Amino acid sequence: MDEKDLEKEISSQKYSTLVTKLKGRFGRSILETSVFRGEVTHVVEKDVIADVCSFVKRENDMQFNFLSDVLGVDSRATLSCFEVVYHLYSIPFKMRIRLKVRVKENETVPTVTSVWRSADFAERETFDMFGIVFDGHPNMKRIYLPQDWEGYPLRKDYPLVGYKDEYNPFGVEKK
Image 1: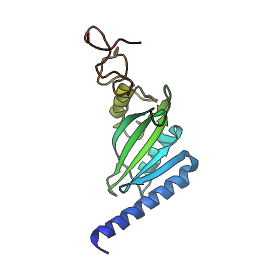
Image 2 (image 1 turned 180 degrees about the vertical axis):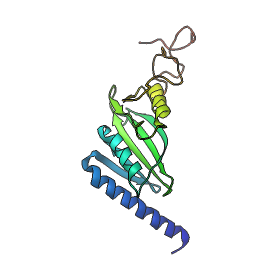
Image 3 (image 1 turned 60 degrees about the horizontal axis):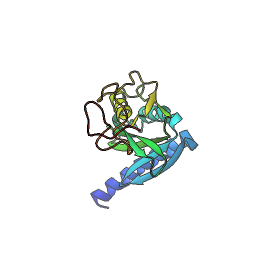
Image 4 (image 1 turned 45 degrees about the vertical axis):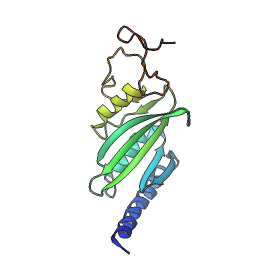
């Protein structure tokens, strides 16, 4: 067995343990699990996302202590929903994991700011660009755009030239 195969074997054992523990703890709340290029993605029920995040951060053999990003995806064309994606990294074990929750239009997602303080700005960015609201967030307001801005620019139904207003006379009329 060469060094790369050994590294792959160790990596797959780590992920296997991770998947087994997470599914054992949260059972049916883990809706889907997939592995692509050695990285595990779990689709989780939105109501347990904060519990799952807290669990993977606290467990001694996981320690996902770094939230590298929270982002939104407009999947309404394919899945009829939005996805909120959490990218986590375990500094001690050098592992990555991706958690996703799916939300319908106007549904909210529990905040994970109690688990990682760094989620504050990332969740606000997701709100600002996609309109996804995080329940319990300490400061849920726009981060890039003015507070009176209408629409969410990264939604697929947002016009590429923006909406027409006093600053953008060439934009699209609002319906």
